[in-house]
Each structure stands twice: as structure tokens, then as C-alpha cells.
Length: 281
Ligand code: AMP
Ligand code: ZN
Ligand code: FE
Ligand code: FE
Image (tube, rainbow, N blue to C red; front, side, top):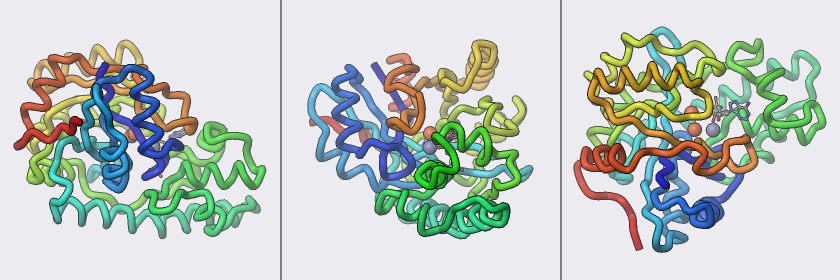
């Protein structure tokens, strides 16, 4: 079983990297990618916890914005974690999330909703990339709302009046930095329309020109029809097709291994990195 997209307490997941590895081992996952938002800070704990028979794929999920302002998530896998330009890009993204969070809090507080930056900081694990799920947790703690999911439905979704975007690289920039760092780039849940505006089928061609290697086809937020459309696009553009859980611990319903990547697709994707970086013990 191959699951190529998961989150930990290094971003907005609720399991530590060690807990994630242990749960994935119990679930029978043989190849697991750790892909926290805009961060590689969970990698070392994941490596330290890793045991046979699991293979670990180190990565990150990079938040990007197209020039039209559409939010696109790019999974970078198997890149050199020491690459300075890529780390600078991730660090810039993390930095801009802080004023963005302050703005969202100002908008909520101006409407009489009980929330402060201190509440959100208290709800964010030390060193984690701060995001809306931490704001949601703080709203739950303040009894404004019952759950992360309800917070997203009522207050924090992309079309909400409280939603503020943060500065981010374009998908093309993120893809080319991942590639320069020797890794492979996969577009995450491209047709997850529930989250907001999605890219057109034509946009994939531009991303391929920037170096895109794969499309996450099998994902909870894609319908059967959307999976079929993405399969067609991937086949036409000779892109690898992946599947993954986008596991967030108990922060989301997504169960480890609920969507998987075909071994032949993974073998192809792995061969496109500039070095053999899968971690085994
Ligand atoms: P941000 O990066 O701060 O814009 O927050 C986006 C994150 O919110 C993504 O990682 C999503 O997984 C998470 N998210 C989106 N919708 C929901 C939801 N309904 N429940 C829990 N988390 C969500
Ligand atoms: Zn997330
Ligand atoms: Fe995502
Ligand atoms: Fe994700």
C-alpha cells in the first residue's frame, strides 16, 4: 500500500510524525510520504521512527496561487531538503501566514466572534506551519463552533467574508524550485471544487512546461467523474497518476490509506527524481 500525501503536527495534522509512522505501519502502508504544508520540519522525527518494512518518502505540500488568484497545492517529493532556494521559498510562505492569520482574526473579532491571535498561537503546535485548521481549533476551544469541519463550513471556507489569502509562489515557481532541488512535483487534488475555484484543463499544459510530473487523481475530494477526467488529462500529458489519503489525524475524516497509488505509477515517479532518496532502515 502506497500513500503519498499526509500531514502531521509540523503543519495542521494532529498526529506527531512518530505517531503517523506508527499508525501507518499498523495500517499496513509500505510506502508513506510525509507532506506537511510549506514545511520539512517533521522529516527528522519521521526518519528516527521509521522501521522496516516501511519506506519513507520525504516531501512537502506547497501552497501556491495562480496569477488569476486560484489556490493550487503542489506536492514536492524526494527533493534535497538542504536546498537553500526551496527552503527560502517555504520559509517565506510560512512567514506570510502570520499577518494573514491576524487579518482573519481581525475580521472575525470585528463581527463579535471571540478570538485572538494568542488563542490561535495556543492552538498551534510549536514550530508548526500555522493555518486555518489551527484557527478552527481555537474557535472550538472558545466554544464558538463545535468542530474543525463546522468551522470550515460556516466561517473559514475560501468564499467566506473572513477568508484572507496569503502571499504564495505561483504553481510554476513551486514546481521549478522542486525540480531544481532534484525532486518530483505532483499537483494535489486539482479538481477539489468544494474548496474553491479550480484550474481549467488547459492549465495543466503550462504546469507540464514548468516540470510537473504527476497528478493526484485518487483523492477524497474528487468524484468518480473528476477522477476519470484527470486520468484522461494525465494520460494525454504522460503524467504519473497518484492516489493518497491527505490524512490529517483526527483533524479530518480522511483515513490513512483510503486512496492509494498504484506500484507501477510510484516506480515511475520515483525514477524521475535526480537521486534515490527513499528512506529505508
Ligand atoms: P490554509 O493553508 O491555512 O489555507 O488552510 C487549508 C487547510 O485547511 C488544508 O490543509 C485543508 O486540509 C484544511 N481544511 C480544508 N477544509 C477543511 C475541513 N472542512 N475540515 C478540516 N480541515 C479542512
Ligand atoms: Zn492541511
Ligand atoms: Fe491540499
Ligand atoms: Fe494536504
